[in-house]
Image (cartoon, rainbow, N blue to C red; front, side, top):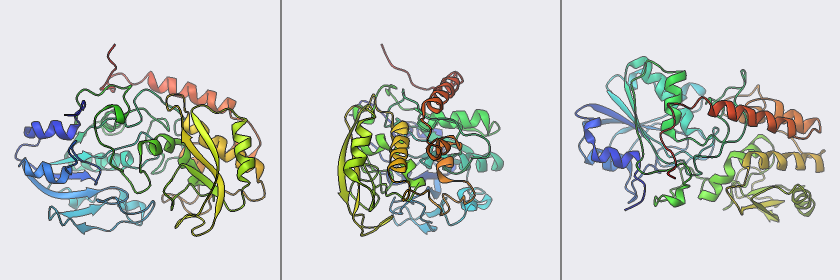
Length: 395
């Protein structure tokens, strides 16, 4: 028996939370029990009410679609239910259609998050909460541990004008919260008329990473193969804002950063001189099988986590971008294609929540003042968490 029970397993013990009502489920392939049984199988088997519909986030119900790949509505061969995709080809598909809630009394949400604001599952939950508030449908969130722990927060808040699907939440870039706690913030700040129930985990403490819970790691998306990848992701996702490869199309996504024109040894020497905590740096060459520079040999850096408690992934990601920008000013370029349905705001601004980080890189400034302002914003954010935090550490 694992040390920690997820909200899914608590609901299996208390099916009266659904009762005899008609319900829909927002989940994907990573929403499983400790025995790896899918939520969409075990919940209906417990016979709480009638499952009428499934909703799927980015990457689809089975987590096979790549990043920013539109997912179509399908019928689930396991349950026989229709699956409404909440990640289509336009931003309008992010919110459930009113007709998809007309025959639903409660929407159950079970989405394994990874602790970063720009990982889109919590934003999908926000859209579902908005639609359910308008439709007067209850939302029941089945909580799970934050896999990268609940103590550490990093990055700034989102400034006005920089909101998007990857900058939708009023939390820092690395937020240190669970999905249920984010739901409570959204209920308080955005959806006060929504009937919301959060089913907490049992026995989780904020200091515990996923590998201390007894729960299995199931990749929640195609390029999130391990807990170590999730540890790096809050900062290494920033590479998406450039023409650099972030390692998609390899077995080491978000551990590899590179391009065909990079001097790998020079880059690693430059990064090592920064004495960044908690990380190992190795000159690397790799060939993505798809994505940026597909089938081309790239040079760059391979990252390994040596001390996850001291690692600052957001700072790390920005230092890597700045180093490559400074070492290769003629080749470095920002992404010009639309990013998560937005084409008129630079992708890095969306990911970091303001133009400040990009302007530091472009103008040759260090990050000291920016990081200090972020620390202050995190302190202010933490001062407003009363009534939100569901978990604490025992002495």
